[in-house]
Image 1 (cartoon, rainbow, N blue to C red):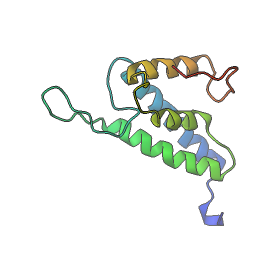
Image 2 (cartoon, one colour):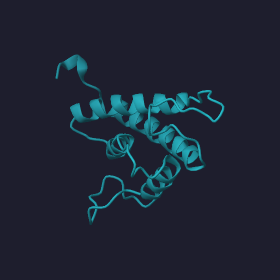
Image 3 (cartoon, one colour):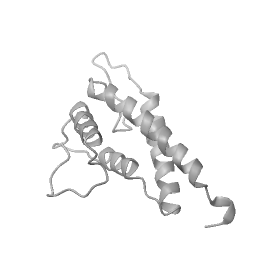
Image 4 (tube, rainbow, N blue to C red):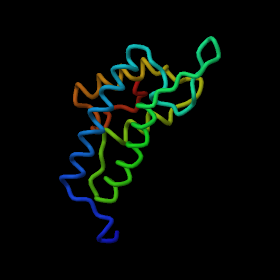
Length: 124
């Protein structure tokens, strides 16, 4: 890593705090039924018009940047890493975004994010 590429711990902590605050706000909205937090696919409503969620898109961009910076600094961010892992879930067994958001919020509230799971199980 080049000297000009380093970020001080105060800046990393601030970036992590901003990410966590935005993530919690988006998770709460998603848990109430809004879709688009865990996927970058443009969602279509019943009438065929797209419903974008710019805050969720910015959050995913921030998560990718934070993950890169935190791993470079040797201080991985478990909340960010788990969020990006959940964003990669696709397919028939996907539990649905609101359910996934409620589950993730519960894990955050219980302090389980970043802790190794006792048994191998799905997060939902």
